[in-house]
Length: 189
Image 1 (cartoon, rainbow, N blue to C red):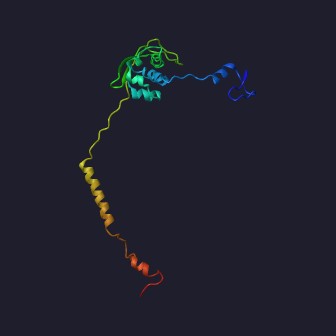
Image 2: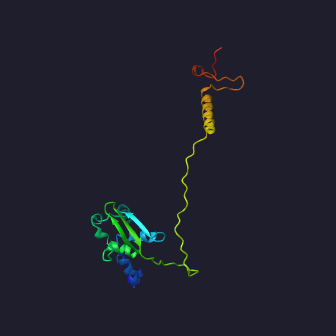
Image 3: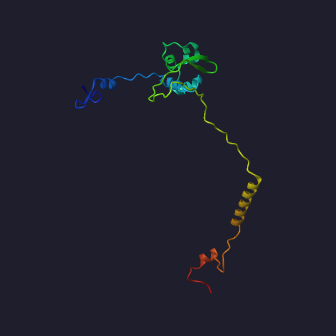
């Protein structure tokens, strides 16, 4: 047991493994997001074609200039950090096109993921990936009848606004001139 290493508080004691976990920096590669992306894609495809711009977006940083200029940068050697990312994910680089700026990855092996559920049967049922059905909505033209009805409604509203207001009975409102000239108590005789 050691005092809290982050604050130095001797009243809060930690075990050595917890203290080591807090103090030691977590080593994260720049290409770990690419490894996670390829592991995700491995569940429903065997070949992935990615543009260099897409890879830049996945890793959240720019690829080095040698990736754009040299095909050897894309080699499947486990000594390089970037290649180790896709090799650990179970993929290998199949083809690279520097002119178009894209690379094709081929799945090599299926990685076993840690599953918490127990398998009911030993038979593996392979289902191909089928995306959710999506129907492109058609743009429909309005019928001539509906257009005529809407046009008639608009014309009726315009006529109603343009016509003078009609009041029931013998009530007539005072003209604006009369309202300004005379107060309600004083009426000319």
